[in-house]
Amino acid sequence: MIHDALFWSKENERIRCRLCPHNCLIAEGKAGLCSVRVNKNGTLKTENYGMITAMAVDPIEKKPLYHFKPGTRILSVGSFGCNFFCGYCQNYHISRFHSKSEFLPPEQLAASSSAPSNNIGIAFTYNEPSIWYEYVYDTSVKLKEMYPRMKIVLVTNGYIELEALEKLLPYVDAMNIDLKSMKKDFYHKVCGGQLQNVLNTIEASFGRCHVEVTTLLVSGLNDSEAEAEKIALYLSSLDRNIPLHFSRYYPAYKMSLPATDIEVMIRAKEAAKKHLNYVYLGNIPNADCSSYCHQCGKLLVQRMGFSAKSFIEEPVCPQCNSKIPFIL
Image 1: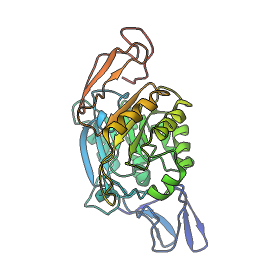
Image 2: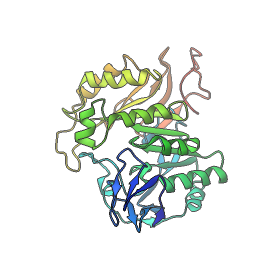
Image 3: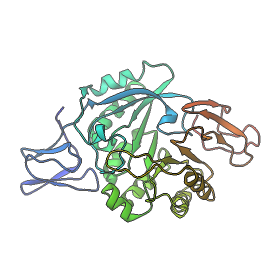
Protein backbone atom coordinates (compact mmCIF):
# COMPACT_ATOMS: atom_id res chain seq x y z
CA MET A 1 0.00 0.00 0.00
CA ILE A 2 1.28 3.47 -0.90
CA HIS A 3 1.52 5.69 2.19
CA ASP A 4 3.01 9.03 3.11
CA ALA A 5 6.56 8.66 4.40
CA LEU A 6 8.18 10.43 7.33
CA PHE A 7 11.64 12.02 7.65
CA TRP A 8 12.42 13.75 4.36
CA SER A 9 13.02 17.17 2.84
CA LYS A 10 12.94 18.73 -0.62
CA GLU A 11 16.17 19.60 -2.45
CA ASN A 12 15.13 21.31 -5.68
CA GLU A 13 13.37 18.65 -7.76
CA ARG A 14 14.64 15.80 -5.61
CA ILE A 15 13.83 14.45 -2.17
CA ARG A 16 16.36 13.77 0.58
CA CYS A 17 15.21 10.79 2.64
CA ARG A 18 16.38 11.10 6.24
CA LEU A 19 15.11 7.84 7.70
CA CYS A 20 18.41 5.98 7.58
CA PRO A 21 22.06 7.07 7.31
CA HIS A 22 22.15 6.54 3.55
CA ASN A 23 20.24 9.85 3.27
CA CYS A 24 19.28 8.98 -0.31
CA LEU A 25 18.69 11.85 -2.73
CA ILE A 26 15.78 10.55 -4.80
CA ALA A 27 14.71 11.84 -8.21
CA GLU A 28 11.10 11.93 -9.35
CA GLY A 29 9.75 8.42 -9.95
CA LYS A 30 12.80 6.77 -8.41
CA ALA A 31 13.30 4.79 -5.20
CA GLY A 32 15.97 4.97 -2.51
CA LEU A 33 18.50 2.21 -1.89
CA CYS A 34 15.91 0.35 0.21
CA SER A 35 13.72 0.05 -2.93
CA VAL A 36 10.49 0.97 -1.09
CA ARG A 37 10.71 4.72 -0.45
CA VAL A 38 9.77 6.53 -3.65
CA ASN A 39 9.57 10.11 -4.91
CA LYS A 40 6.04 10.49 -6.30
CA ASN A 41 5.13 13.92 -7.59
CA GLY A 42 7.57 15.62 -5.27
CA THR A 43 6.42 13.75 -2.14
CA LEU A 44 8.14 10.83 -0.44
CA LYS A 45 5.96 7.73 -0.28
CA THR A 46 6.54 4.29 1.15
CA GLU A 47 5.34 1.32 -0.89
CA ASN A 48 5.33 -1.38 1.78
CA TYR A 49 2.97 0.13 4.37
CA GLY A 50 1.02 -2.72 5.92
CA MET A 51 2.21 -5.22 3.33
CA ILE A 52 2.84 -8.50 5.17
CA THR A 53 5.09 -11.01 3.42
CA ALA A 54 5.62 -13.37 6.36
CA MET A 55 3.82 -14.03 9.64
CA ALA A 56 4.29 -16.73 12.28
CA VAL A 57 3.94 -17.26 16.01
CA ASP A 58 7.51 -17.99 17.15
CA PRO A 59 9.23 -18.79 20.42
CA ILE A 60 10.82 -15.58 21.69
CA GLU A 61 14.12 -17.50 21.72
CA LYS A 62 14.04 -17.62 17.91
CA LYS A 63 14.57 -13.84 17.54
CA PRO A 64 17.00 -14.56 19.32
CA LEU A 65 16.07 -13.06 22.69
CA TYR A 66 17.26 -15.22 25.59
CA HIS A 67 16.89 -12.81 28.52
CA PHE A 68 13.50 -11.35 27.62
CA LYS A 69 10.35 -13.23 28.67
CA PRO A 70 11.94 -16.71 28.29
CA GLY A 71 9.57 -19.49 27.29
CA THR A 72 6.94 -17.20 25.76
CA ARG A 73 5.82 -16.75 22.16
CA ILE A 74 5.55 -13.70 19.94
CA LEU A 75 3.75 -12.90 16.70
CA SER A 76 6.51 -12.32 14.13
CA VAL A 77 5.80 -10.30 11.00
CA GLY A 78 7.83 -8.91 8.13
CA SER A 79 7.56 -7.11 4.82
CA PHE A 80 9.88 -6.36 1.89
CA GLY A 81 12.65 -3.79 1.76
CA CYS A 82 16.09 -3.44 3.33
CA ASN A 83 18.77 -0.78 3.50
CA PHE A 84 21.70 -3.23 3.61
CA PHE A 85 23.08 -5.44 0.83
CA CYS A 86 24.64 -8.33 2.74
CA GLY A 87 25.87 -10.95 0.28
CA TYR A 88 25.00 -13.77 2.70
CA CYS A 89 21.43 -12.64 3.47
CA GLN A 90 19.28 -15.61 4.48
CA ASN A 91 16.04 -13.70 3.96
CA TYR A 92 16.96 -12.14 0.61
CA HIS A 93 13.84 -13.54 -1.08
CA ILE A 94 11.82 -11.39 1.36
CA SER A 95 14.03 -8.41 2.00
CA ARG A 96 15.40 -7.61 -1.45
CA PHE A 97 12.35 -8.26 -3.62
CA HIS A 98 8.72 -7.12 -3.64
CA SER A 99 7.49 -10.49 -2.46
CA LYS A 100 3.90 -11.67 -2.51
CA SER A 101 2.19 -9.81 0.29
CA GLU A 102 -1.15 -9.04 1.90
CA PHE A 103 -2.29 -5.75 3.41
CA LEU A 104 -3.20 -5.71 7.09
CA PRO A 105 -4.14 -2.44 8.84
CA PRO A 106 -2.28 -1.63 12.09
CA GLU A 107 -5.33 -2.19 14.28
CA GLN A 108 -5.93 -5.63 12.75
CA LEU A 109 -2.33 -6.70 13.32
CA ALA A 110 -2.53 -5.42 16.89
CA ALA A 111 -5.75 -7.38 17.45
CA SER A 112 -4.21 -10.52 15.91
CA SER A 113 -1.49 -10.53 18.53
CA SER A 114 -4.03 -11.16 21.30
CA ALA A 115 -5.31 -14.43 19.81
CA PRO A 116 -2.46 -16.98 20.15
CA SER A 117 -1.97 -18.45 23.61
CA ASN A 118 1.11 -17.38 25.58
CA ASN A 119 1.76 -14.62 23.02
CA ILE A 120 3.38 -11.50 24.45
CA GLY A 121 3.16 -9.10 21.50
CA ILE A 122 4.58 -8.39 18.06
CA ALA A 123 8.11 -8.81 16.70
CA PHE A 124 9.01 -6.94 13.53
CA THR A 125 11.55 -9.17 11.82
CA TYR A 126 12.39 -11.08 8.60
CA ASN A 127 13.13 -7.87 6.69
CA GLU A 128 14.58 -4.66 8.14
CA PRO A 129 11.85 -3.10 10.34
CA SER A 130 13.26 0.42 10.10
CA ILE A 131 12.47 0.40 6.36
CA TRP A 132 8.88 -0.45 7.35
CA TYR A 133 9.01 2.50 9.70
CA GLU A 134 5.62 4.18 9.29
CA TYR A 135 3.73 0.91 9.68
CA VAL A 136 5.90 -0.29 12.56
CA TYR A 137 5.34 3.01 14.34
CA ASP A 138 1.57 3.12 13.77
CA THR A 139 1.13 -0.51 14.81
CA SER A 140 3.27 -0.05 17.92
CA VAL A 141 1.20 2.95 19.02
CA LYS A 142 -2.03 1.06 18.31
CA LEU A 143 -0.88 -2.06 20.19
CA LYS A 144 0.00 -0.07 23.30
CA GLU A 145 -3.40 1.68 23.16
CA MET A 146 -5.36 -1.56 22.75
CA TYR A 147 -3.25 -3.90 24.91
CA PRO A 148 -0.93 -1.93 27.21
CA ARG A 149 0.80 -5.05 28.54
CA MET A 150 1.71 -6.37 25.08
CA LYS A 151 5.32 -6.00 23.92
CA ILE A 152 7.00 -4.63 20.80
CA VAL A 153 10.22 -6.28 19.62
CA LEU A 154 12.51 -5.21 16.78
CA VAL A 155 15.03 -7.50 15.12
CA THR A 156 17.11 -4.94 13.30
CA ASN A 157 20.40 -4.09 11.62
CA GLY A 158 20.41 -0.86 13.63
CA TYR A 159 20.88 1.31 10.53
CA ILE A 160 18.51 4.16 11.33
CA GLU A 161 18.90 7.87 11.95
CA LEU A 162 18.65 8.86 15.60
CA GLU A 163 15.68 11.21 15.08
CA ALA A 164 13.57 8.35 13.74
CA LEU A 165 14.83 5.97 16.43
CA GLU A 166 13.99 8.42 19.21
CA LYS A 167 10.41 8.74 17.95
CA LEU A 168 9.93 4.95 18.01
CA LEU A 169 11.86 3.95 21.14
CA PRO A 170 9.14 4.85 23.69
CA TYR A 171 7.03 2.01 22.25
CA VAL A 172 9.78 -0.61 21.97
CA ASP A 173 10.30 -3.17 24.74
CA ALA A 174 13.17 -5.21 23.32
CA MET A 175 15.58 -5.23 20.41
CA ASN A 176 18.00 -7.69 18.95
CA ILE A 177 20.49 -5.59 17.03
CA ASP A 178 22.89 -7.02 14.47
CA LEU A 179 26.45 -5.90 15.05
CA LYS A 180 27.96 -7.45 11.98
CA SER A 181 31.57 -6.55 12.69
CA MET A 182 33.77 -3.99 14.40
CA LYS A 183 35.56 -3.41 11.09
CA LYS A 184 34.58 -0.33 9.11
CA ASP A 185 35.59 -1.95 5.83
CA PHE A 186 33.40 -5.03 6.53
CA TYR A 187 30.35 -2.79 6.84
CA HIS A 188 31.33 -0.82 3.75
CA LYS A 189 32.21 -3.74 1.47
CA VAL A 190 29.94 -6.54 2.68
CA CYS A 191 26.86 -4.70 3.97
CA GLY A 192 26.90 -1.33 2.23
CA GLY A 193 26.76 0.72 5.40
CA GLN A 194 28.79 2.38 8.15
CA LEU A 195 29.73 0.87 11.49
CA GLN A 196 29.40 4.03 13.59
CA ASN A 197 25.71 4.45 12.83
CA VAL A 198 25.00 0.96 14.18
CA LEU A 199 27.02 1.69 17.31
CA ASN A 200 24.96 4.88 17.72
CA THR A 201 21.77 2.81 17.66
CA ILE A 202 23.08 0.34 20.24
CA GLU A 203 24.13 3.15 22.56
CA ALA A 204 20.87 5.10 22.14
CA SER A 205 18.74 1.99 22.73
CA PHE A 206 20.64 0.53 25.67
CA GLY A 207 18.92 1.54 28.89
CA ARG A 208 15.76 2.54 27.02
CA CYS A 209 14.66 -1.01 26.22
CA HIS A 210 16.03 -4.52 26.59
CA VAL A 211 18.93 -5.03 24.16
CA GLU A 212 20.61 -8.19 22.92
CA VAL A 213 23.18 -8.28 20.12
CA THR A 214 23.82 -10.82 17.37
CA THR A 215 26.91 -11.24 15.20
CA LEU A 216 26.93 -13.69 12.30
CA LEU A 217 30.47 -15.05 12.10
CA VAL A 218 31.36 -15.46 8.42
CA SER A 219 34.22 -17.76 7.44
CA GLY A 220 37.42 -15.79 7.01
CA LEU A 221 35.74 -12.38 7.10
CA ASN A 222 34.85 -11.58 10.71
CA ASP A 223 35.33 -14.84 12.63
CA SER A 224 38.71 -14.29 14.30
CA GLU A 225 39.13 -14.45 18.06
CA ALA A 226 40.43 -10.88 17.97
CA GLU A 227 37.24 -9.72 16.26
CA ALA A 228 35.06 -11.59 18.76
CA GLU A 229 36.94 -10.06 21.66
CA LYS A 230 36.70 -6.57 20.17
CA ILE A 231 32.91 -6.89 19.86
CA ALA A 232 32.65 -8.14 23.44
CA LEU A 233 34.94 -5.41 24.74
CA TYR A 234 32.78 -2.75 23.09
CA LEU A 235 29.55 -4.17 24.55
CA SER A 236 31.12 -4.55 27.98
CA SER A 237 31.88 -0.83 27.95
CA LEU A 238 28.08 -0.42 28.14
CA ASP A 239 27.32 -3.41 30.38
CA ARG A 240 28.92 -6.83 30.89
CA ASN A 241 25.44 -8.32 31.08
CA ILE A 242 24.38 -7.53 27.50
CA PRO A 243 23.68 -10.95 25.92
CA LEU A 244 25.78 -11.58 22.80
CA HIS A 245 24.77 -14.20 20.25
CA PHE A 246 27.35 -15.55 17.82
CA SER A 247 25.48 -17.14 14.93
CA ARG A 248 27.03 -19.60 12.51
CA TYR A 249 27.14 -18.57 8.86
CA TYR A 250 25.99 -20.94 6.11
CA PRO A 251 26.32 -20.28 2.36
CA ALA A 252 23.37 -18.20 1.16
CA TYR A 253 22.30 -15.72 -1.51
CA LYS A 254 25.47 -14.50 -3.29
CA MET A 255 28.07 -15.93 -0.88
CA SER A 256 29.48 -19.44 -1.27
CA LEU A 257 32.16 -19.46 1.42
CA PRO A 258 32.08 -22.68 3.49
CA ALA A 259 30.05 -22.73 6.70
CA THR A 260 31.91 -21.34 9.70
CA ASP A 261 33.94 -23.99 11.49
CA ILE A 262 32.36 -24.99 14.81
CA GLU A 263 35.73 -24.88 16.59
CA VAL A 264 36.10 -21.28 15.40
CA MET A 265 32.69 -20.52 16.89
CA ILE A 266 33.69 -22.06 20.21
CA ARG A 267 36.92 -20.07 20.35
CA ALA A 268 35.00 -16.88 19.56
CA LYS A 269 32.70 -17.56 22.50
CA GLU A 270 35.65 -18.16 24.82
CA ALA A 271 37.26 -14.90 23.70
CA ALA A 272 34.06 -12.93 24.22
CA LYS A 273 33.50 -14.45 27.68
CA LYS A 274 36.58 -12.59 28.90
CA HIS A 275 34.48 -9.43 28.80
CA LEU A 276 30.80 -10.49 28.82
CA ASN A 277 28.83 -12.61 31.27
CA TYR A 278 26.43 -14.11 28.72
CA VAL A 279 27.57 -15.34 25.30
CA TYR A 280 25.60 -17.82 23.21
CA LEU A 281 26.19 -19.82 20.02
CA GLY A 282 23.46 -20.14 17.39
CA ASN A 283 22.89 -22.18 14.22
CA ILE A 284 24.87 -25.06 15.74
CA PRO A 285 23.08 -28.38 16.41
CA ASN A 286 23.20 -29.51 20.03
CA ALA A 287 25.03 -26.39 21.25
CA ASP A 288 24.40 -25.60 24.91
CA CYS A 289 22.24 -22.46 24.76
CA SER A 290 21.09 -22.57 28.38
CA SER A 291 21.63 -19.64 30.73
CA TYR A 292 23.66 -19.95 33.92
CA CYS A 293 24.22 -17.49 36.74
CA HIS A 294 27.36 -15.53 35.98
CA GLN A 295 28.33 -15.62 39.67
CA CYS A 296 27.74 -19.23 40.79
CA GLY A 297 26.92 -21.17 37.61
CA LYS A 298 23.40 -22.15 38.65
CA LEU A 299 21.16 -23.22 35.75
CA LEU A 300 18.61 -20.44 35.24
CA VAL A 301 16.94 -21.23 31.90
CA GLN A 302 17.33 -24.56 30.15
CA ARG A 303 17.04 -24.45 26.36
CA MET A 304 16.78 -27.25 23.82
CA GLY A 305 16.43 -25.85 20.34
CA PHE A 306 13.92 -23.04 20.65
CA SER A 307 12.12 -24.50 23.67
CA ALA A 308 12.94 -23.03 27.07
CA LYS A 309 12.27 -24.04 30.65
CA SER A 310 12.82 -21.32 33.22
CA PHE A 311 13.86 -22.04 36.81
CA ILE A 312 13.58 -18.42 37.95
CA GLU A 313 10.51 -16.47 39.07
CA GLU A 314 12.29 -13.17 39.64
CA PRO A 315 15.54 -11.67 38.32
CA VAL A 316 17.58 -13.08 41.20
CA CYS A 317 19.65 -16.26 41.22
CA PRO A 318 17.84 -18.81 43.44
CA GLN A 319 21.19 -20.17 44.64
CA CYS A 320 23.44 -17.18 45.35
CA ASN A 321 20.88 -14.32 45.33
CA SER A 322 22.87 -12.38 42.74
CA LYS A 323 20.86 -10.01 40.56
CA ILE A 324 20.54 -11.52 37.08
CA PRO A 325 19.80 -9.57 33.87
CA PHE A 326 16.48 -11.08 32.83
CA ILE A 327 13.07 -9.57 32.10
CA LEU A 328 10.54 -12.19 33.17
